[in-house]
Amino acid sequence: MKKKNILGLGLGLLMLTSPINPIEKNYKNIAFAENIATSEENTYDSIISEIEDFKKSEIYKNLNEKVKKDFDDLIGNLNEENFTQESYNKISEKISEIKLAEYKKLYKEIKTMIKGNLSDKLKNNFNEIKESYDSVQEYNQNYNNLSILKDKINAYNKELALDRNILKEGIEKNKNLDLADEKKVLDNEDSNLDSVNEAIKSINKKVDDFNEKVRKKAKEEKEKLAKEIEDAIKNHEEVKKDIVYKKSSKEAKDKLEKAFNELKNSQIALKEGKEEDFGKIIDKYNELVNNLDGKIFIDELNALIKYFNENQDKIKDEEKKAKLSKELNSVVDDDQFDSEKLKDLEKRIKDAVNEKPGYLEQKTPKRVTVSRSKNPVVKKSRSFVRTGIGSIAKVAGVLVLAAGGYLYLKKKK
Image (cartoon, rainbow, N blue to C red; front, side):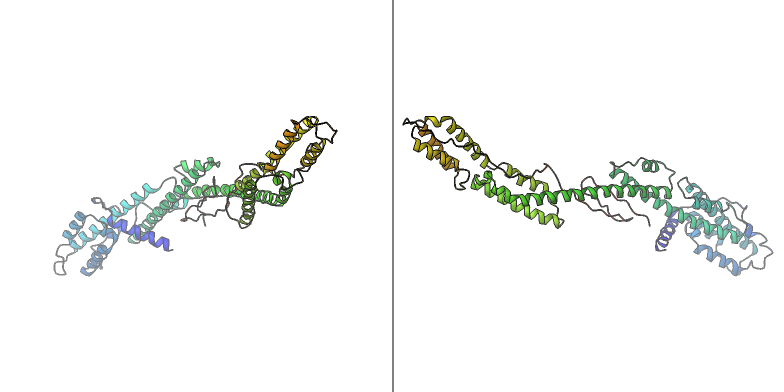
């Protein structure tokens, strides 16, 4: 009700500023002025009352200044002494003439407002009002109905324009959805308010369906990330038991431990619903695991074992050969045996190979076979999908769903 009152007030102000066309005499519909000469009510008091009521009306207020002046000149210095039946007739007929002109003007104006996009109800309301009238009562009723109808049409057109803009915005901001049917409604100038609102509801339904798919996918992605993080955390102790980790440098181990702490923190953040690039954190951890520099140590150790096996016959000092063989076979199990010690062993083996004492048969060192723990297999370039959207009320802002999300339009009550 409040909305209607505001619209009514606005239209009233509009009428105050509307110019009126010059009036042509037309007595076709001045039925209520007939038999004036014989009426007992044609008194000075009655014409004064009629003049006062007319000047208080919106019709008079909307007259242009020339018509107002002509009317005031007609009244002149009318008083009870110079009042005659003729002056009554002229004034009364002039008022009826002005009312008729305003009635036809209003009727014609509303007729131009009856378009294809208007609701059937408003069209029917107009068709029920006659272009002419046969009595004072019919004039008052028809003019009042025309004024009300004008207010309703203006309010309807205002809401239609607003909803068409909402529909247009929804189509423009949701180009990845199939909105061909809704676009037809927008492009059709005769689309009325009901059809526009149905198109808006249709877009919202498609947005709901899309968002549900996004939420489902996001949930699956979150569960997948949680599983990958959990597996990596559980496997960390196995990584530390692996020969590759044990033979890695302190710097490489420190970097891996830092990444592991970030991984544990990301597990908490994911459970709390925080938005982070969890995939990047997992990738960083696994990259450090897969690139531990202990692998270089293992490669160098195997190369040294191969060299020893191929050249051990050249070591003539059997005691030295046995000692070097034992030391070489113990490298894997010795956590303190680092790259520097391996380089020292390599030097001593090569020095022994180049010596020429007597030959004694010696046990051949076995090639080191590293039993590595299985590192977590993680796909690259994953990203966390954000979720969440709410419907937008008629005057609310637009909420957008994550990247590639879709606009919610107003929800009709």
